[in-house]
Amino acid sequence: MRFIPVIPFLLLTVLSLCEARANTRSRTDPLPVARPVPGNSLGEELRGLAPSFSDLIGKFVPGAEEIFSMSINVLAGTPARVVSYYVNEVCGIASHWKIPKPNNTPREADLHWELYSENSMVSAPLRDPLPFIESNDFNPDLNITILVTGWESLVSDKLGEDVIDSMRKAYRQRATENFIVFDAGRFVNSLYSWATLDVLWIGEVLGNSLIRLSKKVNNPRIHLIGHSVGSTIVGVAGRRYHGSTGEYISRITGLDPAMPCLDPSISLKKGDAAFVDVIHTNSGVLGKREPIGDADFYPNGPVALPPGCLDVVCAHFRAVSYYVESVQPGSEDNFPAVRCGSIDDYNTRKCSGKRIPMGYSTPAYARGTYYLETNSKSPYGQNSV
Ligand SMILES: *[C@@H]1O[C@H](CO)[C@@H](O)[C@H](O)[C@H]1NC(C)=O
Image 1: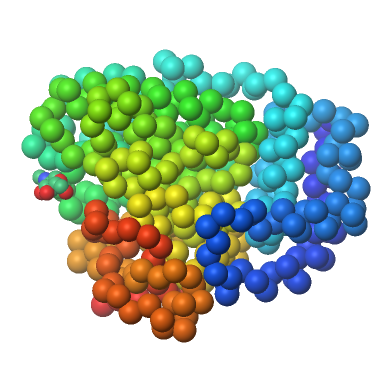
Image 2 (image 1 turned 45 degrees about the horizontal axis):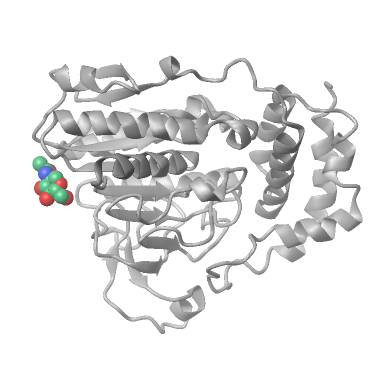
C-alpha cells in the first residue's frame, strides 16, 4: 500500500515526454460548445504507450489516504495536460473501486459558515443563519455576499486562507455588503472527495439555509460566489432555493468552476440564479472549458495556463485573483471584455461590440462568451491605472 504513490511518478515521466507536442493547441482553439475535454484524446494515445494507470493500480486497491497523497504530489508543479489525464484516472479509480469513505466525512453538524465584519467574526451552523441575523455585525439594510471555497486545502492551507482573506479584505473596502464565507475546502480536501463527497447534499443544506435567511431579512440581494467545487455547491443551492420559493437568488458567480470528478448534471449552470456569470482560467483541466452561465468570461481565451502561471494550481486560483482585483474600489473597470464567438475572432479583431467589465461589476444583462487579455502579474487588469 505504502509504495503506491510511486506509480504516478513513473507514469508522469512517460506523460511528460508526450506533453510538449500536445501543448501547442490550446491558445488558438476556437471555443467549442460541446466537445470532449482536451486531455481525453491524449489519454487514449497514451494508453497505447504505457500500461494504463488502472492496470497498474488494479493490483492494489488504493485507500482514500493514498489517493489523497497522490493528488497533492501530482498537482503542484505538473503541466496541464498531464494533470488532466491524471485526475481523470484518479476519479475513475475512486468511483470504480467504491473506496470506503474516510473517517472525516462531514456530518451536517460539522458544517459552519462565518459572517465577517470590521473587527469580528460570527460563526453559525450552515443549516441555521439565525446567529448572523441576531448579531450586531449583521446589517439588514445591506445586501449579502456569500463566498463558498473549493479545494484550497488540497494544495496548502496558506492558499485557502489567501482566497478567503483577499476576498474579505476587498469587500471590506467597499463596506456595502454583509460578507459571509462557507469554507467547503475543509471538507473537500482531495480528488477522492471530489468524486465521492456528497456535493449535492452540502449544496442543499446551503440552499435550505438561504431560504430561512431570506425569510428573516427584507428582500436582500443575495450574491453567491463559488470557487472550484464551491461553484457546484452554490449552483445546487440556487436550484434548491428556486425550487422551493419560486424566486431566484440574484446572482451567482462561478470562479473557474471545477470539472473533474464531478457529475456534470449537478454543476453550476444558467438558471441557477437570476444571473450567472463565470470566469474560466484553467479551461479543460481543473476548470470547465465550455460556457455554462448567462455570461462566460475567457481571459486570454480558453487556456489551461494564463500568462504568469506555470502550473494548474496557479491557473485554477487566477480567477479568484482577477475577481478580487475587480472588487477593490476604483478597479471595477480593470477588466473590459468584448463579446465574441471565438478566440480566433477576438484575435483577428472581428468583434467590436461595447466592452463590459468582468468581475464585481459585470452587468446582469451580459449574455454569451466574452474575451479579454490580462497582465501576467498584479494588477492583472489591462485597464488598470
Ligand atoms: C443591493 O443590490 C442592489 C442590486 O444590485 C442595488 O441596486 C442596491 O443599491 C444594493 N444595496 C446596497 C445597500 O448596496
